[in-house]
Image (spheres, rainbow, N blue to C red):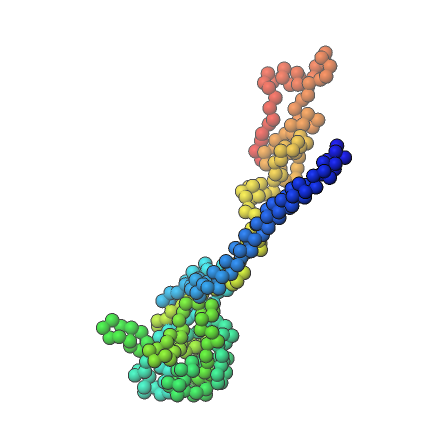
Amino acid sequence: MIGLLLTMIGARRAQAVTVFLLSAVAVAAAVAGPVALRTVDRAVGREEVAAASNTERSISVTAFTNPSEAQTAGQFDSIAKLITLPGFDPIRAGELEAFGPVSTTDSVLLAATSRIAFRERLCDHVVILSGRCLAGVLEVVIGEDTAAATHLRPGDITVVQAARYVLGRGLVPDGVPAQLTVVGVYRPRDPAEAYWAGQQYFPVNADGTRHEAVFTNVVTFDTIDHTLGQSSVDALALPSALALDRSHHRSPRPAHPTARSWLTSGFPVPSTAPQHPEQWNPAPSRGDTRVFGLHSLSPRHENGPPTPSAHRHETSRLSRELARSHTPWMPRMTLL
């Protein structure tokens, strides 16, 4: 048969080569199709993620609760934990509205308001133009446009005073003035990076300058006298969280505990496999139960049911027991 096939192929070499090439092309297309589709999906996914805005790549929770008040801060923490998802980087922040910064206490109520804010890992995302970044208590860093407008420099004392809105009166003081030290002038490394999420810390004024937030640390924030504030947490999606292959890197989900594990704790778990007759009783360690006093069902056990004799003329234990009680044999149950 093999010789016949080889002879036929040799007689029709052109047709055989054509069939072979067509088969190779079909197989190559079948193999390359899914690979190419996967590559296209990855490319489209990368382009969509790169074109997404900061708000589209983050989950933000904001509440008008004072970050310095223990009770409301604890409630906000409980809500914020809900967005602590695998593959997301949470960043905590808080802010308040305040008059200033200015150089003297007398002019603080006449100054425009600014956002006094703290944000985790701030120093990694700003460029310090002069001075240094935050390191201690009662320190602030101001933006370059704010420094130019207020003539404040590193080492100067600045005054801020918390503000709150009252219907019919506008912004009024929300505490006593606080004196802080300007330790640096900053510029955001990239105002559009995902770290800032959708918080808008650097709005642009009509003249093209930025009304930057005044940043401090959480300890200094708490020392400023105020009753109102705003808490926020931004969960930033890492590149791995938005990748198409994320599902292949997930850790296996732990098995859900079933009722069988705790209902049968301390007792042998029943099995479908055949067991020795002595193992029927669900006692932890003994063949005869401690609680119910149930006798073994094994005929070979001394307390087990009597077994009929193999000899038809021999009177067995069973016949004697039945004749004595006139009732069928049953296991005895006694409560201890």
